[in-house]
Length: 201
Length: 204
View (tube, chains in turn yellow, red):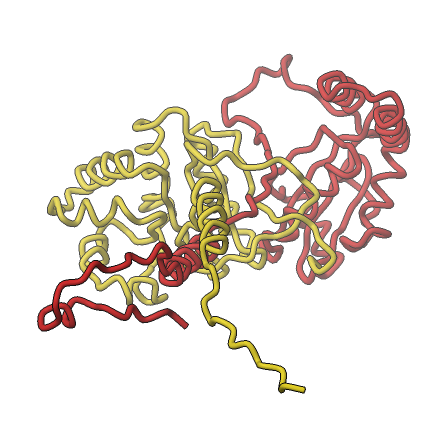
């Protein structure tokens, strides 16, 4: 009996189908994605049973980290550009067009206006270090935070306020934020929370 | 992995011209690689979960006329004081001579107390929820009826006061309990001197 010939199989695999799948998935992700916002600090929001979702546009984000530093940002690059121009004018800080452009791509910024120029000229890699983010002053002597909110409101009246604070933020900081908002007659706002899950507590 | 084409450009020069069979298959492997690379990027850069939000309305700073002010009946009032180390203190009615009790944010602490106080409304809301499931009530009607129930005139009114030792989580937890217990009338207020004195006695 002749030895059964081992048929040499071709190593060629048709990749077309796989390619189709890959691009189908790619299209799906491209269409559904909304990008993760880059925030200079990691904030663990408290959990709640509330199921209201936050809208994606026209949001004014007030970020408070656990040490009590306040960060502020609005959405839309052109709006941000107007905002920083207005704030720079109010605090007579001279910013170059390049620095203004740099500000407009940042989601939230937490620095006093006096330090804004230095901050914007930092290398992007070291911008998020805690030492480079001093937090926006919100004391009664120099309430820059209040002016940020006011300026943002002037630029875009449809803005909704979202407060995103760390769960271990001391209450006095929150109180200061709320007081400032109250003085501006901003009485409706959203507190960002995460959904209460099994490992939430 | 990929097939290497037999006749590449460099071979062509010396060889004589012959009619070459053009391969009908194109190697897709690099394209697949690229596809998956992009997928990976989009998957990592996407935030799928939208954050939840809790909507609150704070009292306006504007002075309200005496006669327009809503005066809460002392019997309806509950005051929560958020202290340090996740402790909650509460008392009913007026702050003068009130008996301050201590509880926690756990389900059998604050929630139990509030549900007891708000028993009627909470029960009605529960009934409404069941009715919604049974009769396939539209969301609109449900919301309308829910608001009606929650605005019950006899429901307790809660004042939430936070001491400087409380943290943000405590505040959100307290607000969350209001939501769970269907209490629609609550306000975040500053500690006044009487309350400060009361709390001092409790040595928090």
